Every structure is written in structure tokens, then in C-alpha cells.
Image 1 (cartoon, rainbow, N blue to C red):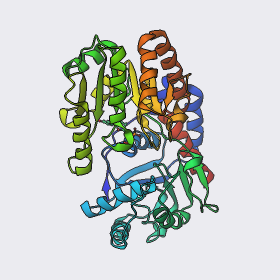
Image 2: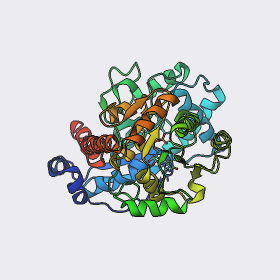
Image 3: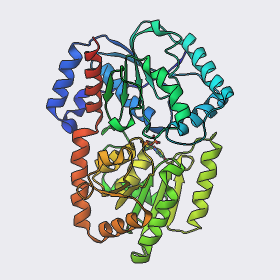
Image 4: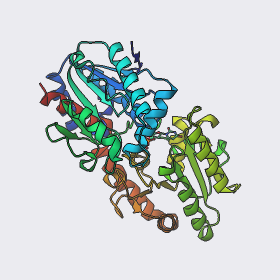
Length: 410
Ligand code: UDP
């Protein structure tokens, strides 16, 4: 049996005041036709990263509107996760491919999970590449299979995507964040474009008073009366925390009292992550105004919320980014935002209107200085960013998109 994940209860009605009545009514109308549909979400993990963040809200909201939705996590061991991490990196463009032995590990765990999968589903949604090969073993266990891709497939390693595409082709549909991410070779497969979304009522995104945010940040040693730049992201080279430190240094030359917080969650069993974390700490070179914190310092959802809410500039200086939930999280808090002009970030930010898109540490520094020196500019950007997120990137919109996909397949 695969591991079921308990998600608690959420009510769509609670979202009406932030997402608007017309959307909530549209959802109810669509859902009325889908009452009792049995939907399984299958993913590789229930902790960390964007996929679990989304499912903890989407699954209870699906249930609230009458879908019999469940979320299960596949079974795996270290040898499998080592392979799927390589695969993930290769699909996002890393030149290192997989050896025949590594492909065998991938196949073995998919087959094992296929046997354990329960039957009788109307729709099985497979999230990301890790469980993508389950379908070929047990197509009869679901009436309809949909592959939900959460990563950037715009420039994949050809040796890996060439083996993934035939797997995806056997699905009844595939869902991507952006048209750019749809790989070649899926001509006969129904494709849906549907970016992810954030939960405005979760502890990470609910409204926090400035005083409460300051109280939390103060406890982590920040001077809440001085300007703060902040990036929240895993310690991963593609998130470019070192570039953020470089940008902060350039800002500090002009605005000496500026501080930087780099917040990143760490997996205890991810040696690569720790190595990069240590490199980032070394790059900060003991600067007392650079605060590098992670979940092992008790930085959970509330603390992430506090840092994002307190920051005078929120940065996501990625050099590659599938979507970047942290972008919508920052904008939803009406913070002035600066992000790398890559992947899903430009979808969320209109350069100069609701934040800035940058290509270098110097550009990031220049925009930060402009924002820190002109609070009215920051307010204007933040307000526009929040309205953009309200219209496009809150979970009720994502729920509506899924219901439309379910409805088209009936
Ligand atoms: N996150 C967190 N604590 C951290 C770092 C990240 O809670 O220390 C959250 C972040 O707020 C976001 C998610 O993890 O909700 C990361 O999703 P995103 O799409 O930004 O990037 P991914 O990690 O999936 O590449």
C-alpha cells in the first residue's frame, strides 16, 4: 500500500473574500457535475518543495467541493532518490545523464509502486517524473491518467527527455506550467497549461501584522528598524544565493545599514544541499548583517511569512525556476519584488509594474537601491503585484483549472 497523506479540512467558502465570488461560483458549478469523482494524486514526497506545498491545500479543497480526492506518496529508498535527483537535474538541463543501472533503479521502484497502487480511480494524477513509469504497468487501475509536470523542461538533457517522452505519451493528458515547458513529441497527447498557485489562508501566506512580523524577525537577531533584503529558497545553485549576497554587498556600499536574510529549508539527508549551504555561509564571510537561516533553526511556515512580510525587498534571483511559489508568496504580501528573468518568474511579475526582472547581481543591486530609496515606488509595485497574484495565482483558480480538466475528459 502506498502511503496516504492526511491533509486536514479546508472550506472553499473561506476563500470567497480573497478570490472573489464569481470564481467561487464557477467552481461550484463545475464541481456539481463531478460529484463523487475518485481522484488520486500521487507524488514522490510529502515534505519540502512546491509540490507538497500545493497538494496540502488543493486536495482538501477538492474534497470540500465533492471530489473524492486522495494524496498518496510513492515508496522509495535512497538509491531511488539519488537517481531521481539526477533525473530531475538532467530534465532541467544538466548535461549528466543516467547510466543503464540507474535507469534500472528507476524502473524497479516504479514497478514496485505499480503493484502496491490501489484500483478503482476515475483519475490518477502523477506528479513529476519520479512515479511517471507506474502507468505502463497498471493502466487498468485508473480510468484516466494525467501527468502533472512541475519542472522546467524547456532545455532538457536529450538523453533523459528522449526516454521520458514515450512514457508521457501513454497518458491521457499532461499538464505544464508554461507552453515553453512542453517537450517535443507529445503531438497526440492533450496538453493543458496551468501554472501553480499559493494558498492565501495558509500560515505561510495569511495576513500578518507588521508588529507580529517584526516580533518574529527580532527573535532571529534582525534589527527590525533597519532595511531588509530577503530571499527564501532551498540552498541550490539554481537559486543563486551567492548572487544575492553579491547584490547585497553592492547595495551596502550605498545603503550601509541594509541587512540580508537568506532562508532555506534543508533536508537532513541531502549532502549536496549541505555542501552548497556551507559554501553560501563561506561566501557571506562572517558579515554580521547577513543572516543565513534554515528549518533546523526552527524556521517554519510562520517564520517564512514573517521574513517575507518584514522585508523591504524580496528577491528570487534564480537562474532557472520552474515556477517559483516564493514569487507569488512575496507579491501576495504586497512586497516590492526583484526576480531573475527566467522560467516562471516573468509570468508572475511584470517588469517595472509589479516588480523588477533582472539578469545580474549588479542589476539586482541597482533595483534594490531604487526601491529602498523610494518607499512610494515599493508600495506601488507591491500593490500591483498583489492584485496580479489575486487574479492568477491563488489556489481557487488552480482548483477551477483542475475541475475543467476533469470535466473535459468525461
Ligand atoms: N520554503 C520554505 N522554507 C524554506 C525554503 C522554502 O517553506 O526555508 C518554501 C517556499 O516558501 C515555497 C516552497 O518551499 O513555498 C518552494 O517552492 P518554489 O516553487 O519556490 O521552489 P522549489 O523548491 O519547488 O524549487
